[in-house]
Amino acid sequence: MLTNGIGVDLWTAPFDHLEHFVRWLYTITLLYFIQCAMVKVLLILFFLRIFPRRRTVQLLWGTIAFIVIWTISFFIPGSFPCLPLADYWTAWDKAKPTKCLNIYAVIWVHATICIVVDIWMLSIPLYEVFHLQMTLTKKFSVALMFFVGTFVTIVSILRLRSLIAFGGTSNVT
Image (cartoon, rainbow, N blue to C red; front, side, top):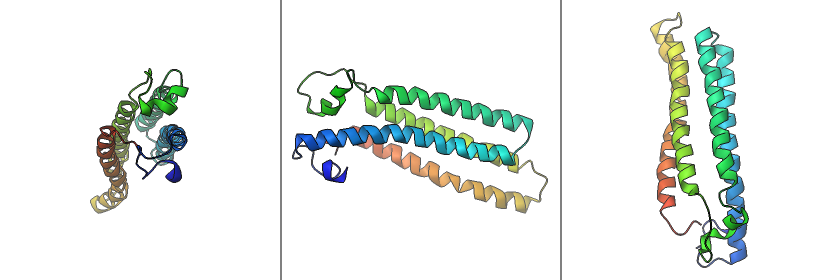
């Protein structure tokens, strides 16, 4: 990607490099949707092993179901951002009219839901920890370990801000 677009001015790059860049960007976007879901599902599967309460297990399985549906609902439009798909590789030049989704809007909504799911996933173990039969000091110590997850959420919020700024530019590289 570096040699075909990132860091290179869009308007000075050779057209074949831009098409190659857009193909890689397309692939990476789809892989990101899958990777984001897989990390969340794996973390929830870990929670299922350490929080056996029936209600919590139901919430966790419900969260997995939501994540799977959410991922599919973003993977499908992400897979076909333009009809026909080949128009996506050259949509940047605006030379011919294309029927394309606003892929930035798809990515923004995905990132927003990702942040909400992160907060939800953080709240479940924290709730469980504070209902354990431990001293308050131990509860806070364990909760502190889960609060490390807030770093990921903060990074996601910062990423969303940069994605919004990125969507307003005419130079995608």
